[in-house]
Image 1 (cartoon, one colour):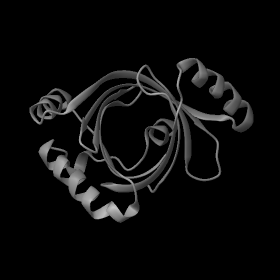
Image 2: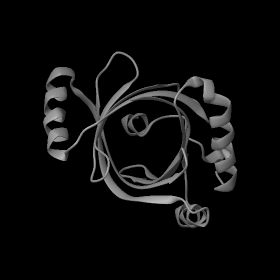
Image 3: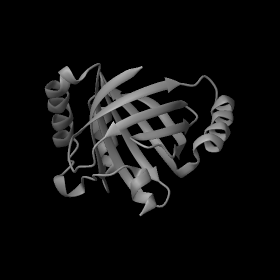
Amino acid sequence: MQKHLIEIKARTTRTAQQRTLLQTKKAEFRGTDHQVDHYFNVPDGRLKLRSGNIEHSLIFYQRGDQVGPKDSTVSLTKIPTRALVDELAITLDKALGTWITVDKQREIYFIGNVKFHLDTVVGLGEFIEIEAIGDSADQREALLTQCEGYMRYLGVVHADLVESSYSDLLSR
């Protein structure tokens, strides 16, 4: 499945308040997931295998590094079991080599097509992510409006925005 996203990542010290604001908006809470993302060596973009209690998937994405809302093109293949994820991790490591592993606790919320993550990343701290999800780049302006609106609502300020992925932050 391929999707187009407008997304932000920001450091936060306001996780409890942001959780309350999401609950106030009647966000659908999907659960708290312990996720380990295995990033593999690829010539372009990012290829990660996510192993979690809620989400298991192989994800390829291309996204520029910039502060603020950014476009991403994402191809996602859901994997039915954690055991299969573990097998794929071994195979992909042998084929491509593992670049880095990201370990995090993630609270997952949805309001319509917008996904919210309240993350605690081992070695990095606390973050919030907002992903406005569409089917094509033609929806870019509407997705950007959603993302920016939720940034304001959740009190995400420019100074807290992060331009890079967790994998890049950990590799530095």
